[in-house]
Image 1 (cartoon, one colour):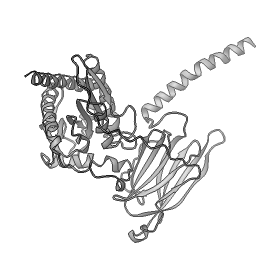
Image 2: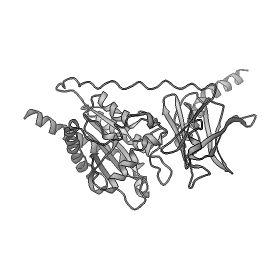
Image 3: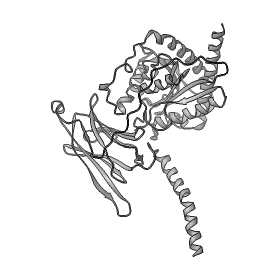
Image 4: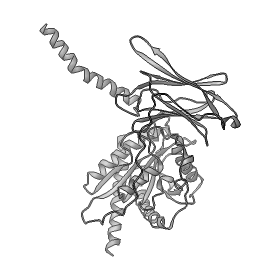
Length: 418
């Protein structure tokens, strides 16, 4: 009996360690969009069956849900409670039936989301659960059938359906009106906001090996935060502290609310020409420096569309790139920091030609906080993708941002004394 008790105690003590190790390995392969005791998603797939296209989610249990359809462009959105994602990333090399692509992730705390891009107006044909799995590992299969229809028919088709137990998460609190920051005192730490691009249901660019831009930018952001705060001269905040979607407007509003003195948005793009590599720094402008900058800004400004946000009810102040008089001075300050940053990055990593570029990036729209967007490199280049994933690269970027920030604030102090 004593032996059995000891064995039972050992198993009890070791179980959390073993489980933690297994979960850790699994999470490295497929990072979870949400954590906690919610449902676990193990698979997601698309299949074409004549006029019907079927989207299936395999889960360990049934869950409440809401389905709705958006236009401009056409998207089918499935909202779920916060879940743990263990499904492999989508691998659609071509359209499957009516589905051009799909993505999933955490939309906001308590609310995970699947966004399905469709290539035509669609109607929700059926939605239901089927028991799946085995007696040892029971599960549930969520099935969504959609059917293509004409634009005329789309106008009279229901656009939203919810299961009986669906309860919409509480909306995020509206941002408070910006208030002037208190007078800066000598010795106060400078406040810097670092923005890891993309997140949650918006993965950003996808590298040659399948890595998501949102994971690259988050790791770099944390490295920058550690580097700056280690000096004791800076207080560094992140626009997101986990893998969650944050709207473009809310990103720069968070910088304003924190009375940040600098805003640095981090990204890592892909491009058709896989030979191109190198970092670049962007600042806001109504007119783009070149066609590539304009195309990139257009792409990045679609983040809210990608996340399945209904933009028809929102104002167009973010989408607009009209620059106010109040913003002119902020843009000048952004350009000064960008020049310092380009010089420092040049000492540590490869850069594109004409490194300082400008375009109408919505995330740089703050009229009060000097802001830059850093394209760290191209995930489409095999060598650069490997570099972007390395700790050594993150440290080099962090050191460059620290030195540029030091130069920028020393310049401000000189000007204030004169």
